[in-house]
Length: 70
Image (spheres, rainbow, N blue to C red):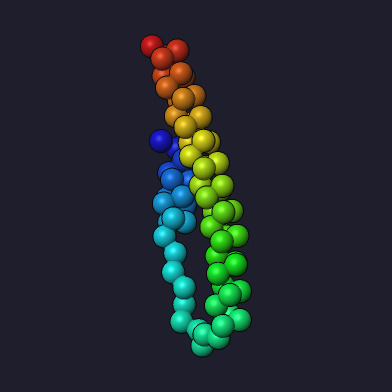
C-alpha cells in the first residue's frame, strides 16, 4: 500500500473519533455547538465516504495492475 493510501486510511480513522473540550456552558453556547456539530458531522461523513471511495478505487487499480503484470 502506498504511503498516501495509508495516510488517508489513518486520517479517515482518526476523523471518526472526536471530543469536545470543556467550556463554560451557556444555553446559547450549547445551541451553537449543537448546530455546528450537526453541520460538521455531515461534512465529515461526506469526506469519510469520499475517502473510502477513493481508497476502493486505489485498491481496484492496484489489483488490476498486479493482474496485468502476471
